[in-house]
Amino acid sequence: MSRLISVSEVRRSLYWAAGGPQGAGAGEPTEAVLGTLFHSVFAGITGQDERSNLVRPLERADARLEAWVAILIDHAYAWHVAPALLAHAGPLRDRTRAVLGFWTAVQSLCGWLSGVLWEQVQKGASISEAHAAVFFRNEQEVTRELTDPRWREPVTLYGRIDALLRQPATGVSCLVELKTGRAAPEADVCQAALYHLIHGDGVDAHVAVVAFQPEAHERLFTPAQLAEAEVRLKALVGRLAGVVETEPLHVVPRTPPEGRPSASDAHRRLGERLIEAFAEFGIGLRVEGEPMAGPTFVRFFMHAGHGVKPKAVQGVAQAVWTRIHTDQAPQVSVQQGRLAIDVQRPDRQTVAWADLRPRLPKREGGGSSRFPIGVAVDGSLRWADLGRPENSHFLVAGTAGSGKSEWLRAMIASLLAVNSPESLRLVLIDPKRTAFVSFEDAPALLRPVVYPSDEDVLAMFDTLVQEMEDRYRVLADHRVQDLGAYNDKMPAERKPRIVIVCDEFADLLMAGDRKRRQETETRMTRLGQKGRAAGIHLVLATQQPSRRIVTGPLDANLMARVALKVAREIESQMVIGGGSAATLLGRGDLLFRDIGEPVRLQSPYVTEEELGVLLRT
Image 1 (cartoon, rainbow, N blue to C red):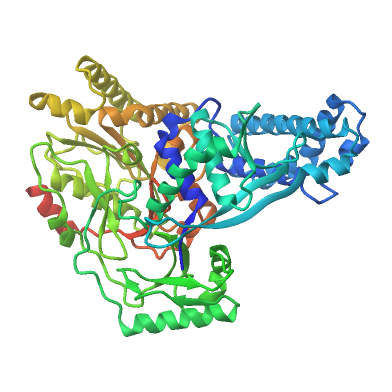
Image 2 (tube, helix red, strand yellow; image 1 turned 180 degrees about the vertical axis):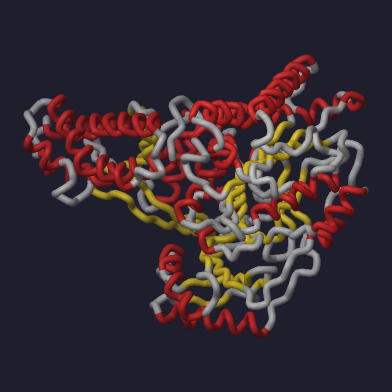
């Protein structure tokens, strides 16, 4: 039995360890959907399907490298790029610059592939022979069990390798990791070590990291060059999987469980039905330990039979749904390295904000930038800290009835409970005029609640941007890096954090013409890029988490994500990088992600009476 950890979770931790968006290298940032399409183009061109791969086009071309590149570009466009862009026309609307960058990267890819095969043909191989010899495995799903004497149990690392090639000059196999958009050279060795570590059975294999920015930049690593990085990566994997005593780096401080709810006989019978239902589809599972009964769902940690992968379990979850008779399909995920299946609790509980208030930090002179996101399945509180880079700005998404506005109200209430107006100021933007009525008389308001139909929102944002720039000058004068350090150094001249909360910013953006929308986005993006150090934070909520609303530059700076129930899987993918938010149960059932895999929580509910008492204290 071993813990499970995905390559994507390790990569995300490496990304944030390198500084997140601010640590990215040269090149334009890449839209997620275009990155996926780029990998699909590579797989199609180099794959085994003779109708769509590169063999026939190159056989028709003149025996010149330039002719090869030209015909392969035409072939890639006709067979792969054009159909893909047509299929994703909606998400890519208004993303002209990103699409052009993607197309330039595809052309660079065609030049790179042509050059690799040209070298072989010049040595006497035919095009088909060169293709078979070099591109012999694509999109390979791999798993590797890792052990360490200091770990409590083994860890199974699983993921996908873009391609396994055979180097023309030496015949040595080479793992290929393709990257598009920004690339930081100092992070390449970590990425290379990760894929060499997971491959396992090819200890002599080299690793090539090929970044298209959009021009091709290739770095080749030998096993000896990766040895030291692999040792550090293995330690990181152990921490992420929770098999060492050290707290995982990506976990923010949490309050210990108080009165963890115990599972009932009804919950155990639900687990038995779940196992029987999966068995009908050939998936052998058994419950590992006691089920955990959270406020909204029951979590069963499962041990899968030999050869059963998490994706296989996820693949039949919808079919199992019809056997267990719940409002939503069970959610399958990997939590702390173990396979977890969440099933709707038949006796759902409400999490009252008033019950959580005693667990909040004490209101002190300096206030606090921490607030609870929600209650985990074990009864613990999951916290966020606006002062931390990964929590400095939030994107909150959820459809009607998901509990989005209620989550915002609970967040504001938690911050008000632990801060005075000297340590916290709020800017509340309410396009629909219904979300923040209860806070109209809050002493911490920097200005009255903003109703965009009644005033010039651009002028308001200009004032905030100017405040941010003024604060940066003060930080520079006192030789400190951020607001926290300034307040510690100058307690008599403390400056409050400013938290800007917009309940439905899609309405805010769509209220004016194209020029006004761009001006609004520009100001919000500026605050997102520089606001953290100045103590100015964005919390933007929407029912429409699409690329049209959450544009690339803004998306890159909203690092913390709260996904309540959304209407479609593509919206869940946009918010948290996966489709599971579409099967949430509504009314505050949420997924939170900053670093690492998303964590499922239940939002507290704050009543009007509780808000009234809070605002009078």
